[in-house]
Amino acid sequence: MNNDNVIQVSFQQNFIKDDAKVPDLKTGGEIVQLRVPANAAGKGMRPVKSFSRFVAGRQKDAKPEMSCEEAIALYRDKNRLLMGKPSYHNGMGMLYIEYGFFESAIDCFKKSLELDPYFVDSFIGLGVAYLKLNNTDFSLKMYLTALTINPKLVSVLISVSNIYATLDKNDLAIDYLCKARAIEPKNTNILNNLGVLHAKTNNFEEAIKCWNEVTRLKPFELDAYYNLGIAYSEKGFVDAAIYMYSKVVKTGKGSAQLYNNLGVLHEKKNNLKKALECYLNSYKMDGKCTEVINNIGLVYAKLNNYNKAIDSYLKTLDIDPENRKALNNLGLIYGLTGRFYDSISTWKKLLNIDSSDYSTHFNLGIAYLNVGNKTNARYYFESALKINPKSAEALMNSGSLYVQEARYDEAINEFKKVIKIDPSFYKAYYNLGTIYYMRRQFVDCENAMKKAISYCPDFVNAYYYLGKLYFEMDDGEKGLEMFQKIVEISPENPIAITDYAIMLSLQKRHEEAVKLFKKAVKIDKNYIKAYFNLGLSYFELKDLKNSERFFRKCLEKDPHSEWAQKAKTLIKKIEASNKQ
Image (cartoon, rainbow, N blue to C red; front, side, top):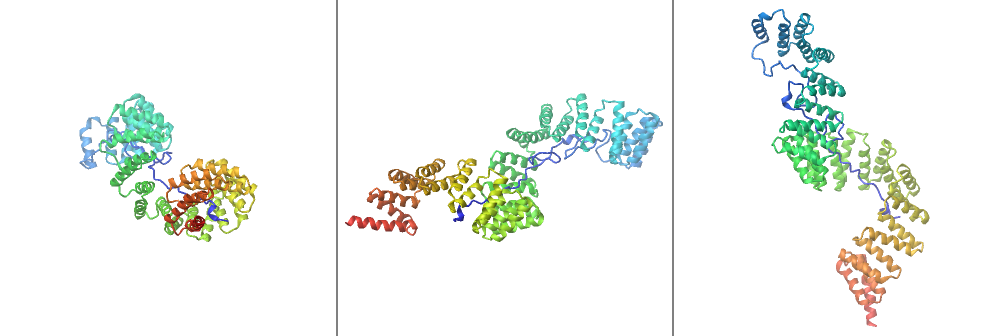
């Protein structure tokens, strides 16, 4: 049996992509972090991955110019008239917070509340101090108490929301931010954080509404455009996402993350050159970001610039020698470019890092198959099957190996397992059909090939076998139908056209065959098989002049080919006939 007829499954080309991701959000690996405006610091927000904790507005941002002792002495001197009043102890507590003496601050706030149990600022101060001491429960309790006294304290509502957000109680966090928004509907910091919370709960529609409102109120609020880019991308609105990111880029304030995200979006639109431009801009800003370097490599691979793709992944591995994505993608490119020993070496490194990855075992099997090491190929296909016993691809290749070893019963068993796992795996039916054809089990072969075609109507290999099968069963008309179907599927394929014409010649339909052979050589002027058979058809039509002309074409194109040698023999016959 000609093993070339058996179809194997090639490398699992699942290039691992470093689409920028949103930390803590279920994003499908598309976007980087959401951002909170930098000018929101001190109001319960900050430009980092998560929400900040609220620090009361009385605090100064600048570093104190005097020592704590000096500041306390000065405070006492200036506020002697307030001694014994809640506001005095409250102010002292805020001063201690400013200098980082949180326990002392708590004592002051408690003294204030002993004097006035409803002094709301002291409950707020306690909330701040306890939060600084990482006592979230007590901090929340103090803030909520403050809200029972005055439910319209926007800063406290924001602080409570932030605490619930850090506890992943996003519904409560949203509820308190909505209360703050009802009081200050035009507060863009509230709107922005509300958008972040909606995004964390995958409610991107509401997040988009919030951030659009921010841009309406503050048209130059770049973080809102950035976040809108994320949200629109998550919703699949690629053009809208690109537009939002571009608004930031036009200001000259695009970040490495933003350019990476923009590259991801352009890549989705298959605008690879633009994607590459964005990734390279990101790389210029952060040359150590392996995620960006990996994405550069992937685009180069898609552009068939494999050398630059390899360089990119090697750069990643210089930074992080155990980067799984880079090792996986590098192994794939080595395999796709025929550097199978390099791919084997690369995937073995990956296997040392993670021996449980099915794809690595599978791809090692393919690589060994390509270097002719069937023993190792089978070993890795079997190890892949241990990880994933229902891998149709590994079973297919195992079956193909059995065919190469002429172990046809075992091959049939493997292909049947494939079909049981995936009844639509048309190549498994085809492989079964080729074995049945070799064994002259024509009915089984016909059924298998028809099944393959039912799942893949344009599968020319199956039509080819059916055509051969019908001719062997003396059903020339059916055979011709199959070869005609191949030409309909591939009307510009000279091989398909030539095969169909040959079958017409076998049916003595030489005039039709001549037209098709001429079409084949018009498409491919160097296709010697078509020239030879064209000469043969003219020979059968007794047109010896044209017959000799096309036989001599074979000698011109490739005098050492088998077709040229056959043509020489027939030219001699024609010359002998002309002498008679």
